[in-house]
Image (cartoon, rainbow, N blue to C red; front, side, top):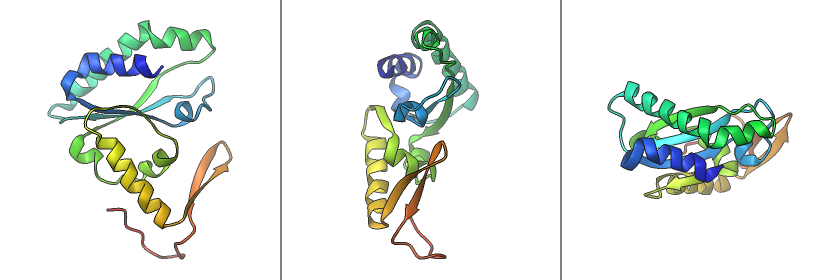
Length: 155
């Protein structure tokens, strides 16, 4: 799965693709039949959102002929839920990154952008006593060294 995702996105974005990160149920190996494929796509820059989405759809067309048939044979209904950022946006803290620290699989990271970003957040979470626990079908992260009402900064 990883190689097919990387190949498809490299084919359509080329040198503009900086990082590709799988997260969520597929990254954890807990996907169900109707689970989406959560994917963070980091591009060098985003000049034209329409063009970025057009290329995303081209990547999905490629996956329709490579990855998706194999997943359908196993009973899954694959579709990607993308989050697409430029490098400048991707390197700033996003609350989503807290869960990514625990579960993300970095599939492609040409310049180490997401490896460095998530590592910085991982270190901060360690300082705050972060603990991840199963909660229903998902997970919750508690910060054991943070007092109620205390403001936490990740920047």
